[in-house]
Length: 346
Image (cartoon, rainbow, N blue to C red; front, top):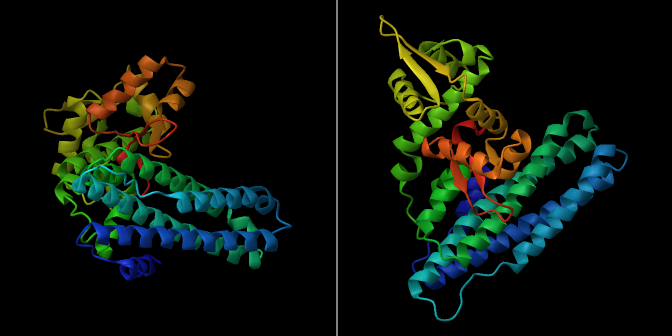
C-alpha cells in the first residue's frame, strides 16, 4: 500500500521552478485530495447501504459521511492565500506551505480510503465483529485531516517560513513527511534540513520519551525502587525493535532526563547505572500517564483530569518542553497540543 501511495505521489510531481509552477502544483494537489475525498464519500455511502443492519455502521458512518462532506467543502474553498501587495518571496512561502500541507492531506486521504475499503470488505463478508479498530482509525484520520486543513490556513495566512512549517509538521507527521520526500514530491518546493528535522538532538529527546514510557511500564516499583539501566535496554530491544539504540545512546538520553529532573540517576560501586522516577513528582507522572496512550495532551485535558489551575498545568507541561520531551503545536483552532514524540505509535 505504501508503494502504491509513493507511486501516486510520483505521478503528481511537478518540480516547480518558479511561482507559477508552484501555483500549478498546489492546484494539482488540491484537486487530487478533492478527488480522493469524493471517492471516500462514495465508499462511505456504499458501506452505509450494505451495512444498514449493523448498529455500529448505522450509528457511526452517517457521522463519518457528514465529516467527509465537510472536508470536501473545506478542500473546495481552500484559498492560496495570495493577496495584492505582498512580496514575491512571501508569495512563494505561502504556496510552499500550502503544498506541504496538501501533500500530507493527500497522504491521509489515501490512508482513509484504504481503511474504508477494508471496512467495506468486512461488511460484505459479514466480518463485522472485527472492524471496531478500523472504525476508530477512520474517525481519527478524519479528525487529523480536519486539523491539517486548519493548520494549512494558519500557515498561509501568517506567512510562516516553509522550513518552520516543515519542522512543525515533522513533530506529528514525520512518517508522512519522510514518505513525501522519498517520493520526490518536495523537489522544487523545499529542501528538508534532515539533521535538524530528523537528527541526533531529536533522536535523544524521542529516546528519552520512550525510556520514560518503559520505566512507567515497570509499575509502582518505578516510583519506589531503582531500575537498572540494563533492564531498560533489554525491554527497549524487546518492545521497540525498530529503535536501533546502543547502550551509549540510552545513557545519553538518560543523562538528559536526569539533568532536567525527570528521573533520579545513580551509579553503584560496580559502575552499574540505576534510575528511579521521582516519588514526590506526582505531577510529572500525571502528565506522562495522560500522554502515554495517544502521544499528546492539551492544556484543558490536563486541567480537567488533574484539577490543577491553568498556571499549574502550564508550569508542569513546560518542564517537559524544556527537557526536550515534548513539543508544542499551536496551529490548532481549539488551542495548542503538546506532543511527546517518543510516545507516539508510529
